[in-house]
Image 1 (cartoon, rainbow, N blue to C red):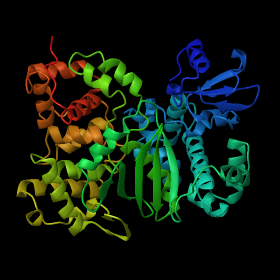
Image 2 (cartoon, helix red, strand yellow; image 1 turned 60 degrees about the horizontal axis):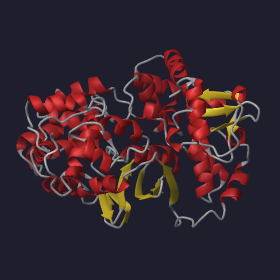
Image 3 (tube, one colour; image 1 turned 90 degrees about the vertical axis):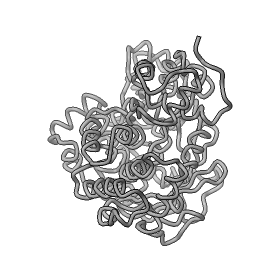
Image 4 (spheres, rainbow, N blue to C red; image 1 turned 45 degrees about the vertical axis):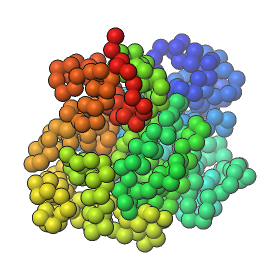
Length: 490
């Protein structure tokens, strides 16, 4: 988000952290780039350049400010949920696609040539895929340098660098310090994580209603895969090079993240999935500004202005759980999913508390007999067909999936209807404007607020909530956990 220069300069003068990550401030007189909220002295206008991404600032030869750590700012909400090519590319790069498959693999995944992709990203975010991946590698390396004692050669490999020399040069170029200096600076900044774990602080924009997000995920926790301990949510992840177990706990202004990784090369992807799971890159101010004025939702939004849309750790897992949950209660869906995990999920080599398994892969469920699944036969067939198409590559549900065609592909699976497709779009594909019409919880919430559900009135209400209908849905669901309210109509 870069509007006119004077508007952005006013944001810088106010040092409002809400705009961190929306744009980055380059200061030509010092050769650094900062957050808009940087506490350093306000630079003169003629020394300021604005950038859409940290990678673009680095491409211009600027290094990260040592006071405000701009790379640690929340991600851009522009690309967090955007369905266009640039948004999909941005999310795939954050998930480590370039490190694993290179730019050719990223371009093929998006259906564009490398040249076209370079042009699109440069126009939209100010940097091409290599520059964006380089910035991502630098941030991953810094996390490992500052939060673990592992040797720098292993850090370089885990972060995706081709050599230790490239690693050293990149760190010095981006941060103005050597890896040794970064590690020395990080010492004494707090308790270190237990051996074998990486402790991170995941930044997010305020306000952030982390309690509601953790409660939502915990109430739907699948036995063996997820567990809730107070306000700490734990789950397993299946990643490219191995597995992981993550603990997420909201704290003041951030989320404490503890990671146990089988392979450090999966750190980038694991962090990206945790951020999507809690919707940490959202812009709550923009959402609340619109929904807070709505007659039906206004009071709910004002009570919880930082409510987020809980995402999914894996697209296929989310879709499978949506199929399992068709026409049954949350408790019943958890029970069925737990039975599938016990039978088809891979057991962790080292269980962590109640987290003992990873959710079954699409390949494992594609080979299952629908008649032997603990659910009605028709739903079992739908689940197995969904798994077969994902396993065969006919249907992609990862973070780079194109929204419209993917929803259409979901609807083509026998047994998957509009409710299921909308639910997957909302939580699995990151669509901010999904609306699962006919949802039982929505009907109850609307009726409780004095509105007729299931007809023309509900459609009229939902139209007024665009393009944030997913957030409206979560507010309505959350309202069911609160004390009954009087009719909201006037």
